[in-house]
Length: 336
Image 1 (cartoon, rainbow, N blue to C red):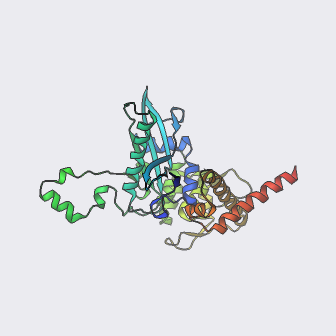
Image 2 (cartoon, rainbow, N blue to C red):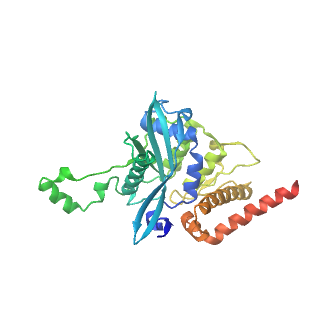
Image 3 (cartoon, helix red, strand yellow):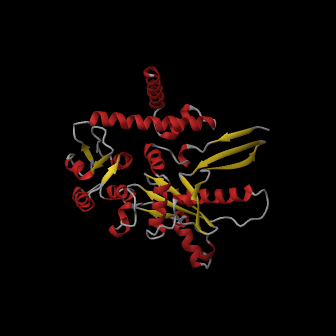
């Protein structure tokens, strides 16, 4: 009997791209808590970093098939167990989406079910009361989500109608995902966010309207950290660039310093001064994140071609990343 570790095929797994990596890195405990408080608690400070801990984002499924034991893995984006009250615990999870996915309700259902099964199995057969999990899908586009938001939305409508007409509609099980769309977030909702996550959401929301973005800047005068600006650039295809090693960027000044060549095409040009160095620094950050993720996945038995496919990049580009990071380490060692 052989034991095989499997990763789901590309069409059914959550493909990790640059946006996904940046979002996971950006969602520190402070940002995670801010998102949960704003989306679920109307901005009240109920969830705090001190009362949460990260849980394993990987869930395993093991089955026997043709004499072999096969194990496949699924990876959540972010999951925390939080003490929401004295000795009252709940699991919160956030899934980031930068593209629409017809199967998203099924994916969320699978993630949640696997977590419940993990809780049961971790107690080795002893009956326990499992902790509920609340999963939120954050869709990082300026457009509206046009795919199913529940399993029922995926069913054949003629069949559902027949079942309902024959008194069986109430027996159809459903599973609905909780979806957050920046395009649908009203101004009062944005004010519930207390961190720079508010600005990230706003820049995505207004990314198709230069006038709306200008009004937001004039009203809020955002002065943002490099990590926030880097994420905004990636999510909105913008070119806001840090110059002269500044720690923060005044977005009002940056906005005036770039040229909008068309709303549909996004921001095409940033200030010429410092763009080359800024892009080089962003590329280095991107490559570092690839190398870190690759090293972790290699420990789980994945090959370079599989990792490149998971990242959604050519294998040659992944090799460039390893080469650049290796050369940077060598250069630093030679300087000592």
